[in-house]
Amino acid sequence: METPRSGPFAVAAVTAIIAAILWLPTAGAQQSVAINRGVVELETTGSAGISVRIAEDLAGLIDDGATRRVVPVVGKGTLQNLADLEFLRGIDIAILQADVVDYAKEQRLLPGIESVSYITKLYNEEFHLLARPEIKNIADLANQKVNVGLVDSDTAITASRLFDLLKLQVTATHDSQQLALDKLRKGEIAALAFVAGKPAPLFGGLTGEDRLHFVAVPFSQAASAVYAPTRLTAADYPGLVPSDQPIDTVAVGSVLAAADLRQIPERYRNVSNFVDAFFTGFQSLLAPGNHPKWQEVNLAAELPAWHRYPPAAEWLQRNVQVASIQSADNLKAMFSRFIDERRHANGGAPMSEQDKAALFQQFQAWQNGQAR
Image 1 (cartoon, one colour):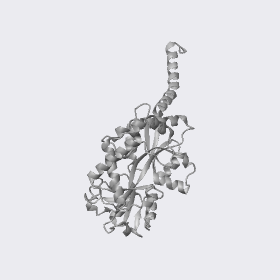
Image 2 (cartoon, helix red, strand yellow):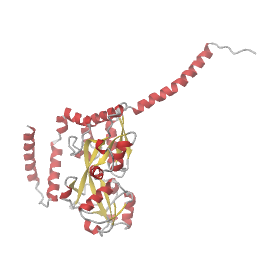
Image 3 (cartoon, one colour):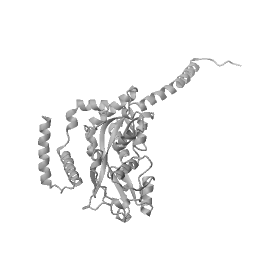
Image 4 (cartoon, one colour):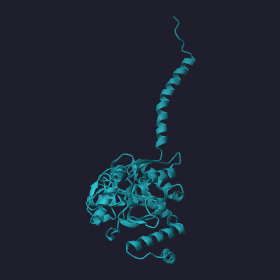
């Protein structure tokens, strides 16, 4: 029998097989490095509100296809997000509800919460109280069933705090908001409470035919450090709010917070790059197609008793003029809304547009004097 020859073709074949075997894990490792390059994981407060949409807007801004990428993660609420920022592998930044963070600090619920710092204050989220037709005002909810979302959810904590401030006793239920809306339609509960930035998708399909309506929530001066007076209007919910009858309620701020990553250089660098791209490209988030709540964001706004994330503070110091510039129209609109809401909360008469314009000019003169 003839012995197979070990010619050049056989050697070449064996060499190719060995190279392929060695190349496979190398190629996989290279692909893993490429996919994970610059990734920042952003945890939202849940899918029912607007934080997922805000995270999507950020992902669209940050992702450059090569060196930066935001991966949104749907969370369960601020309390869980705080724990995840501290302990869950991979979570770099999160959207938090400010009053729930205050609650966690007051109750000392999470060790190490002081290590969480903020990148920027985001938008305000409105407290929605949707009720059946027989509920004429918030006092009618005394001893009635009111759904406040899942146990320890952002809405549950905010609702409990607000009802305590108003000295209103209700029977809280803890269904998901979608299930609660179905129960509300059937008359199994009297109302549902929901904290979300307006317009909240949960109420998007409701019309007068559903025979449900928003109940006014009075503003308490005792809560002025945490909550602010605001309104739900026909522009927000055309099927629920009459054009001439806006609904008074309160709003609570949300925060973009960062984990303490100083001991993890790669992730710290990724978040630093995220901050730079976010702050530098912020103006593009104000364009049509992104969520209208971006119009409320002031990157330079300070949060008392919070520490600013160092790369964010450094960016603001380098770009102080850019951070302070807002279009005159946007600033004037915000000023006008502030005057309306504060005068209403204090029981004052509405101010005419002419008077507001004159007061705004005085404000600008004062602002310029302060700058000098």
